[in-house]
Image (cartoon, rainbow, N blue to C red; front, side):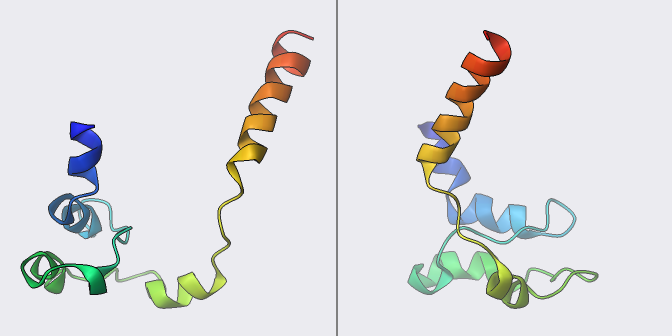
Length: 83
């Protein structure tokens, strides 16, 4: 729980957003963050060779319902590992 809480923190999410670290966007809703946590994201250099995140988000698909992943794991176990 300690690791999960850190990974979802504004500090860790901002660090991950830096192109030299990972360059990925944050899972946090930046509009809902307190002002002192928004500051972490203000001076991050944006990705140079990728489309803007807003453009990618327009084409993004929602994640599948977890029941599909459970079904895939069960089918793999019963039909591939132990047929």
